[in-house]
Length: 242
Length: 242
Image (cartoon, rainbow over all chains, first blue to last red; front, side, top):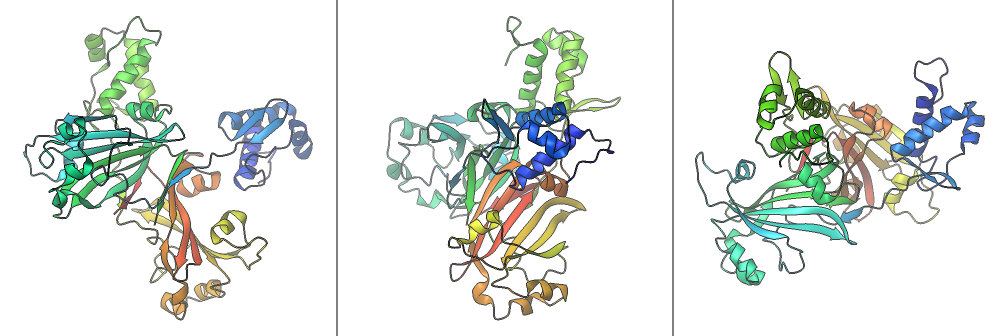
């Protein structure tokens, strides 16, 4: 990319794209110092305000950082935490051996709702006693990375809420229920702007992009026994798929 | 959520959050018409400019749409195309049976580069003859949904570029090479702002969020035989994980 003095695009915008390109191609490596304003002026025959505005916009975008008294640096991306061997069952509540260290926020009885019901393939007009919602945060290094919601039909696990409130062990909760535990699942992975409540949970600005994994888990019979909705901070987490 | 007239948050901003909450909770369903300015004024005892500013910001955010002469509607999310049974091998070039209908943009010989080399676990200072880069778009309904790049070591497939240029069939390219074809992989799935070139490929504004699946594929021997870098438009595509 070269600067074009006859273009209708202002020079500062061209320079901004030029610097961005050099960052993206690795000419200016993450964490390294980029040339000073003066050096850019000399290299490209530009005025100082032009350089300053290009740099200021890249700082606002989070691409560059000014370290006072030291110069301007390429922002170092945080190394993402990778969730290894991610599968549809990785964050299944029913699949866990214990919930003691999960940081379970609550287990609530919910009315049936349209968005969750759609996964259960209930026949039209089917009424059911609702779901247990188990919700817990994903925390690494004291930092919230994500949030998990698991919806479990009351029909299948009528006493789940009481069992957990009374501290019953997972192995006892699941005994005699093996036919109803998740064997496989079908999660849809996508990215979308956070809803306000999700943004608050993940401690990100409203409508920031989040990574979402959601969908039904199936018991041996083929029936849906759990629905998962996992939201993740894409700046901090990646899923490893094998 | 209720409006608080004693709050330091301006009323229009509170109303904006109130409407957004109603959209996110489904009170105002996707595609449906929301109350008119006048109705909001009456329901909440607000002035018309206050309502107008709240609505205008949600229109700018893409949450609401004004249909001229008809009213204000909740933006209907495009139904995403789901890529079913997505695995690390779904978009492997070497795993394909043919490339005729792929819309292959190019197959280029590339020098070794640091970002791709890191997947190959080469010993320090290892020199190698580089990669073949096969690149193709993911198109559905004449719309670019994503872009795939596959890096294949020249060491393993020395004639790949020539074979494809001469129209050799995939089955012939792969014959006697079965030990070097991908058996499993390890893709990292994340979301991040697009680089400028990626944004251009996907026809999205620069630094829009994209979904990225990238990582190595392994041959039976355990050696890396292909590296994939798949970028997707998260507004149009979701990955189904089983």
